[in-house]
Length: 297
Image (cartoon, rainbow, N blue to C red):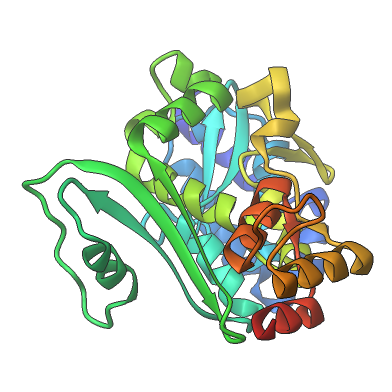
């Protein structure tokens, strides 16, 4: 099939009633501009021209529902071709944008950690109002994600380069074969991964619920609202961290009592730091009322 014929087919598909009806429901008057932009993205990629257009439509609908623009330059969301299908991928900026929309974050960011960095260096890179130049002469040894909520709660997650490489090796078939976005854009994927893991493990339940669609849709092939993770067919569920679990009030009450007494039910020393470690290890989060009580304990 020649290039002109392919472009005509792409234009016809995305302007067909099957594609336009769901786009109209999501976008209304913005549908025409969105469709034109989508067709241009596909036509500008030789690889996307050859993938199943229904999977591209699934990516487009997800992008529209999350209100994240698809653009390699902006870094919020991408359409990534793989084995004749289109995967929807959210960039680290996309996860930050979605988190900020909840209105509960005072600050959320991710950055690289360089060899020789002090804790103050990393904190400045995460929180400075002015750009902090990268240490181009020093190797990157890891990545950190950090957030602070308006209620004062802070959380961070650090992964070494080796841990992130192991993550890619475990969860990406394309990386195992020496290709894919982990190979072509390791830093973007590393930043996205630490942000995504931090939010899925440490964000309060109310935030996690709001972001559950994004966490589930990331790196999926989407057709008719069904998600399939073709880059990790062997264990697609573990490719996406499970959403946090709520700690019931009875267990929370026992934890607060242990903080006040300084000992857990086994007689072992217990304080807020140990409580946070327990919550993180078990995948529990506190609701807003529990969080306020925990901070004042």
